[in-house]
Image (cartoon, rainbow, N blue to C red; front, side, top):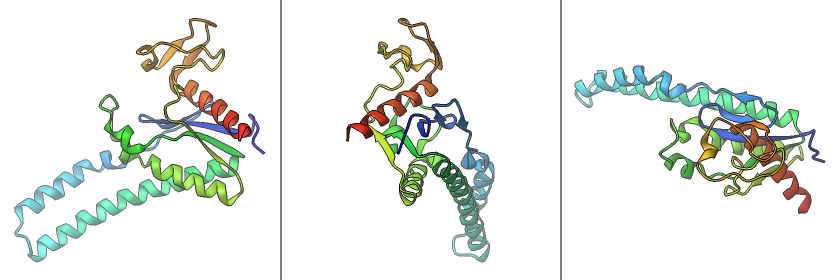
Amino acid sequence: MPTPETTLGLKYSMARFYAADDGSAADAPHWLRQSQEKLAKLQRRLSRMEPGSRNYQEAVQKYRLLHEHIANQRRDFIHKESSRIANGWNAVCMRGDSMQEVSKKKVLPGNALDSGFGMFRECLRYKLARQGRPLILVDRFTPTTRICSACGELRGCGLHRRAVWVCDKCGAKHQREVNAAKNIKAQGLAQYFAA
């Protein structure tokens, strides 16, 4: 049975993969970005080769293996992190964000699809379900970053993009992503017990 003490609230973070309501975060390495130089070098070599030659086929194989290595690194991190969370918490609350919609936003740095957060959410879902624990998805249009988790005050638009902000009503100081994770957890538990 989920309780506030045994439930984790997670907020997707472009910079840090996710932020949790307890202040912790997962800093996933950017595997594709780290291998970008190797990939560019292989692509330059490929462009100078004659398609169909033996050297060309060998270079294509190296290029394919490098992409496979990057995918395996991402998959390994996602499975280890989702297992750690599924084994440590009775319930997990997340926003039901569409990763394709998130990736279309121009203001976010990096590539949302490269992080593998959608795959992480699916791994977490089946690992929790296997143990009989719920993954609670909160409506993606809930203004979790704009609500003060201490008093419930809703802030105006524009100011919620700051990394750290102070509530005008109660004076509580919030880190934006941790505050959003707390709101996701509160909303998820309310939604779970209402159902």
